[in-house]
Length: 358
Image 1 (tube, one colour):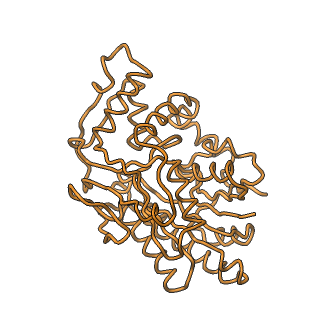
Image 2: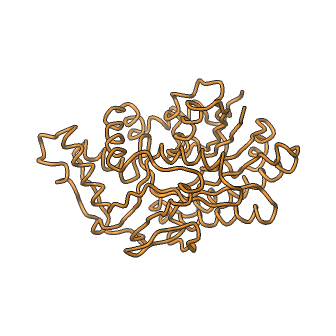
């Protein structure tokens, strides 16, 4: 039975990956998470009682604790998703991003290398370190073209610079020490269980509550949108079938301006949850001052993962967005827990100063 150590498993993408592993495979998962504001174990309630799921309240910058995890669990693979990921927060407070995304990745790489070197030949050959990154490391595109696996790095925010640094560390540990790594760079994810600081859940929840829908600048910044469950499937496929040392870009082939995304959400809410106090939800749109260094356009060329591994997204933007809006409307208890901060109180009571045991 495969054992996979997943960092950042209480986050948006990590929790989706864990739910798929537990529900669709016989793998054992060790969820390693510091439980910062964006980590929410309530997103894993559906699998929390499964005997193949284990949670460890550990900061990946803590070298002793990370080493203990490898000793205790003897994983066959690492999927590294733990990261500070919000661009606005990186602009106002970059230090945390440097610590978690760079120092944390280094700490995990060293623990993985030491563990991997001590494995027998068979397990050593099978071991994988899968680093999950972002398309933001590539910088900003003009009106045409796509990010490919060969695109030069040009990060423009403290967040993307810290992720670019972590990507380079992973590459160096492969080329210098032989650690068997694979790296993936993804486009903007959306779907259920996303923390409401990000565009799509923020707009859904603000619109439902009749609050302004803030859009940076003119709303013409373009992103490629990827449904989180499609991304989770791709990550699992790269872990099992990806070629050591390779990079795979994962995108949804869904380029949309921010304004188009907001209007699409408003149209769905006009249908599913009409508000008598306003004519249309789009009347709540408000334009705010653009953020510093706001990249104009991201778009991923996902041909390599399709060609070499046979992956393609199952959801279109339209089907995925409708599922997302429907999930937020149906899961008011989860939403209330996040927006009120109750989830933090629950986790503090459960895990402050503790670590779970087998």
